[in-house]
Amino acid sequence: MPRHLLAGSDKALPPGAADLGEANPAERLEVSVLLRRRASDELAARMAGLAGGADPPGHLSREQFAARHGADPADAAALKAFADGFGLAVADEDLPRRTVVLSGTVAQFNRAFDLSLRRIEHPAGTFRGRTGAIYLPEDLAGVVEAVLGLDDRPQASPHFRLAPAAAAPTSYTPLEIAAFYGFPAGTGAGECIAIIELGGGYRPADLAAYFKALGVTPAPKVKAVSVDQGRNAPTGNADGPDGEVMLDIEVAGAIAPAASIVVYFAPNTDAGFIDAVATAAHDAVNKPQVISISWGGPESNWTAQATTALDDALQAAASMGITVCVASGDSGSGDGVADGADHVDFPASSPWVLACGGTSVRASVGAITAETVWNDGASGGASGGGVSGVFPLPAWQRGLAVTRRAGRSALAMRGVPDVAGDADPRTGYAVRIDDADTVIGGTSAVAPLWAALLTRINAAAGRPVGFINSALYAHAAALNDVQKGDNGDFAASVGWDACTGLGSPKGADLETALAGHTPV
Image (cartoon, rainbow, N blue to C red):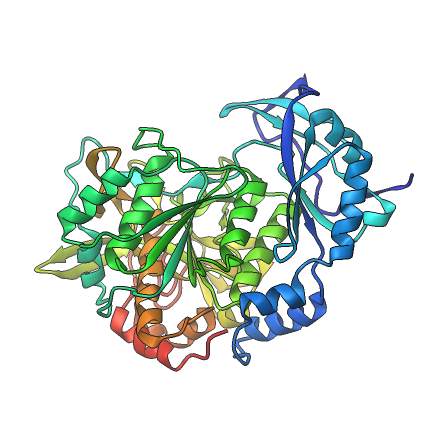
């Protein structure tokens, strides 16, 4: 039977990795297969108008999106017939998300997709992986757009930093940070915030104690949703993923306490990340209108098929009027890649998200007296930002310049971040993790900070503001322009820069600016 290479599926061993031989042929795994979208040209035209700064006539409801742009049942049937021929079972099927999850053994997946899964040793541990490309039968060529989850190497990292043990950090509660930035009054009543997590968990007793100490009563309602068998699983290590989970919930919950908070737990794989975002976007039960993501990795760590699949999920969210706030990373202009070059974090680099960078604040008598780019040279922590090597320049960033050490030049590709907020662990957030009070910073705090701000604005307006990037760039005066500091190779400047974007929020001014914005 003729086989066709699945575009964008080619994969090489990561730097420093070694092939230890074949993976156990009897090992069982689940793999997410992404099918093509119906009426993709219609959606592309709609999103092109949005990317160009146009305001389309309202967003699609989840039901409308599923009916117009979900997977074709005939395509799902063709995939299931193919899977059955190799003994693979269907573990889940979701046509709105265009996802069919197949279950089987390593040996079965090797035969089905003409590959050889291996045991890979890496400085970060041993995992199941592959090299080369994935191949499809002729009748599925063009039908299947991605095959995800064959590898179980961690795809992303959380973007938080604990305050240095030797330091005596200044800390603020999320409510104090909100007051610094002039957030409009509100509780987020009637709204839902989705939080994406790829590990760790929260303890309800910790949350209850934290919110009680803040005077936030009743405490926010927090619900865990399992994706791809991920679950709320606290590790007991504040410096592990628990730190991320608790920080996200406590920042969002303190500022928007009457909003429901739904935490989508998924495995830290390409499939898990993409399935979690898509599940949140299409969740017709909880109906989140803001999604907060504090995980990511350098663009160079993603395969082309996984990048496209996650970007498609983010595009779908934008078309349904959902704002997605994403941390831009904590490793400055290099994004933690040890090659001396500039890199940006994905999914923060997607043009369909609000990329959130980091600042360092000094405050006195309840007000910010100085705000600079977050860059702690001693620990290496700094606001992630730079220029994408994958995504073209969005219309709302046309005409901007980027300031590097070598000078200023025209911004030629998607610039990161869009906005910023306090992220310096030395001026960080007072939180509670695993039965202990601590101070945390990182751009991980900025994504839920902006998510909570937009939730207050949504609740007051009685409608979601939706995809707001074009509106923000048109109303830059509604943000505090941060003009001092650098994140390594990029420096702050007047206007947008690749360290803090347009700047930190002027909450009330943003509410006014977005009041006249036609939501997607």
